[in-house]
Length: 443
Image (tube, rainbow, N blue to C red):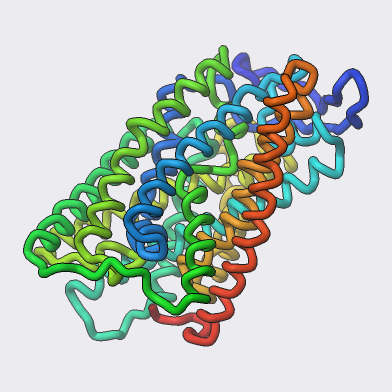
């Protein structure tokens, strides 16, 4: 592990003293324990207020309606904060810092859980990154259409451009802590497109006749869309990589991470709430899954918002791709200066290849809502809620009352059922969209 002092040590065995199976954990080639809680808070807030917020009016509020939508967002925030606090408190369980989600799972359960957790996390982050590339491509296309709506440039072309730009950024930023000033840039970009979307939607709403807020679809489709929206609710708040973010935080790591989480779930969520609620208020059940497509306003203003959304997405994607970058750098011993020929060549080849695969999948299946729903179902639910509660049970069971144990088991069972239901709903949605759109569709 490359520690604050720069020294490196070999692989270590972690295991619980009583009965957990030992798991060999590789050290990291990336820097850890160097960032303030405030920087970690901005990493979390960048994820919450990424360009995905421009879709929540359509993917959460439209299927749920006013009362369930508002209550669902508030409840999802409270439940997500609780689950993330549990994970944060386990960061130093057993007297060691667990800098990866899979490290913590392996320490508590053993080798099989280590591999399963890594698989779930990889799927989660891969699909989030794919969704980011789709969104950034849509933002670029929206700019093009504003000035030249000749249908010469299709969405897959803009997705390819996005993948290339993301690869350039990934090559230039060696590890998560190195974002630093880019987090400030990301915040400014987020505020630009959120404020513009908010103001344009507010103006449209004030000048429009009464809107229809009824939930679209027949009874069956309403049931499935409601379940899918529930998966989007948890997707909105959770990264699926909290231990990796916490690894960058200075000691005391638990105390500092809790500060970052409280910031994320209070101040950090306000922009998301504002644009989500105003967007739905302005357009009702006809709200687009990309809010800027519904707004009316000066061409240059909408172009600025879309360009900001595109650029912010490049930064956000780097955050969610960083666990894969860390894995590859550690696996092949990429340490030292980021500008060394070997290190630079490695990043061009490996990170460029990884993002090329992301980009290909995004161009093949550009169904944004489907990605959010399926990601929430098969990985966000298990990682954030099922594993979080069960790991906390396993780690702290001797210090819990019967009531506390029952509460955590209730969470495990409830979110297990929700995960299965959401996965079925998401697969149905993909099947329906597959009949509607061709591969490489120009949405």
